[in-house]
Image (tube, rainbow, N blue to C red; front, side, top):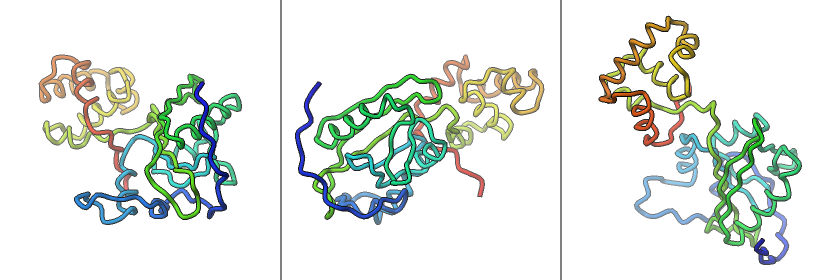
Length: 229
């Protein structure tokens, strides 16, 4: 295992928050980037299905997007302590998580894979080329695989192919891995109705099988389904 280069101890820094703190990083946004500020960038990444966090190498949370905040609220596979530090719920993974954070901050990209049922974690860690006035150690970007409960936004795909509202609901059920019987129960309609709608979806989208349709959906941008206002 590679040894992480030693760094000077971090200086005192202000308490972290889970939102509106990207502005505290000295991020150099390109002039042609369509964001007026780090706050705009934070709002943009809230639309992604991937949980994203910015952490200090000791695990202190600097920023979390909407998907990450919901994951932390659920308390698995990572938890946010009262001291605003993030750590794995499973104790046996904490030393590996800590090492990965420190290694990523030192410039060594890391990946974590834990298969522990509801506590499973699949994540990538990358150093951020950013500095703050209060810490000599670069923060780390932590990106996790989305939860299986995550609702992907397929509204654009549905609109482009002229799907009805009912067909769109069936499409979303298929995206969650539901079979026709499961989708019918979930939507409160008959199995025959769902099968008819699946046939209509395949015809409108030009796919000869559900597998082909789902493969095409897998290439969509990873956006979250908008929440009702």
